[in-house]
Image (cartoon, rainbow, N blue to C red; front, side):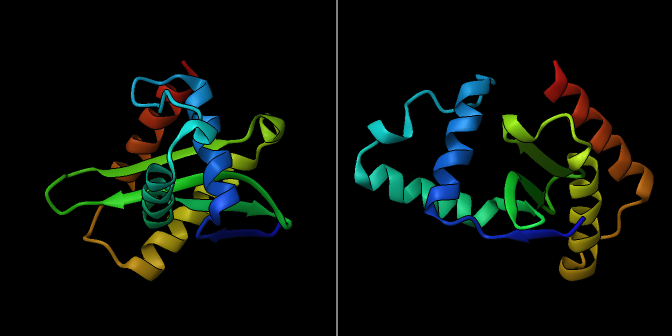
Length: 130
């Protein structure tokens, strides 16, 4: 499987926004993307392009991932999601592994033990599945 992370284009931002809105998590957006005014759409696109990466497998955009490391926070925040049609195929585990590798190799964050990062992943997976 060929995994590639990329900055989402506007169409991918719209798809990510809507997929996250539909799951109705406490921090999910509530307004449909198409109902936003142009200024709000542009703000969302800029924000998503800053923090989100499209997860592409074998040339198809299958989901998204964020890895946020703030020095003021002892934890690394890893967020992720798959579009419904790609769930249940074992893709997310491989995307997460790829993302962690990319994060550590290219961003060189502060030192964290593998155990700390693994526990964060476990908690994120549990929260998303409920």
